[in-house]
Length: 202
Length: 82
Ligand SMILES: [Zn+2]
Image 1 (cartoon, chains in turn red, yellow):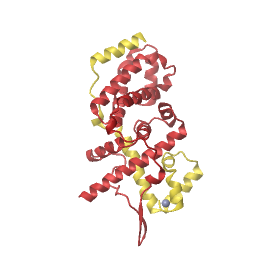
Image 2 (spheres, rainbow over the protein chains, first blue to last red; image 1 turned 120 degrees about the vertical axis):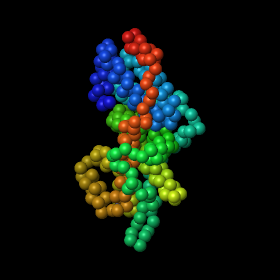
Image 3 (cartoon, helix red, strand yellow; image 1 turned 30 degrees about the vertical axis):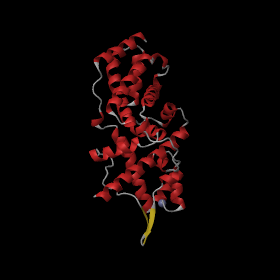
Image 4 (spheres, chains in turn purple, green; image 1 turned 45 degrees about the vertical axis):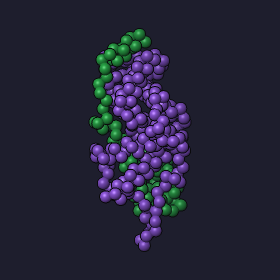
């Protein structure tokens, strides 16, 4: 569901137009489930987070003065509910990642310097990923520290804008950009590591 | 990834991929990457990482079960009351 549609549906709902109810609820439930699933890793938890979030959204819809802010507002609620239900053991430690630790290694070869990274050429650019890649991706995302995982999911999976993401996370837009970059680099590194382990095991 | 210039570029790659850099900086970076095989390889892997995340949004496996009717009724009641 595009942003325009969500904002449009929120406007209609807030004006008492109940015909917007079904499409709004259905679209939001899908997005919230997806976000919570990627964020906490459990299907059942994610379904409950989506439901709890929707309930909260509808109970306090009046407090949302500007329907334009519906997306950051809803995801903020979802993020907080996820946070309260978090299972400490499966979560990655809170840590700031430095650019240095996210940089790939390299070695000097007779024909110049070579990166020590996996072969990414078989991974799809746009088309659907294999079940194996999807599993790898899910696990790698779950291993990211909270602040990076949230930023990555909001920006790259949910495709919220930098400004919207800043609002959800209560940080400024520069911090969103810094975190997003590190989150992508960290995810790249984790995927890379997994792919190399696999190649080595073959 | 292996020279000073690579390292400087490394810090800006997300903004570069998202098209958020000023045109002159952007051009400078593309110019470097074109002639730097390690950068080509690394940028490709980063681009694919971002692509996979975007791809997760359309995964059919990641669909929830339909909402319970009882919950829908509660949502509707909250809306009417609101
Ligand atoms: Zn380079």
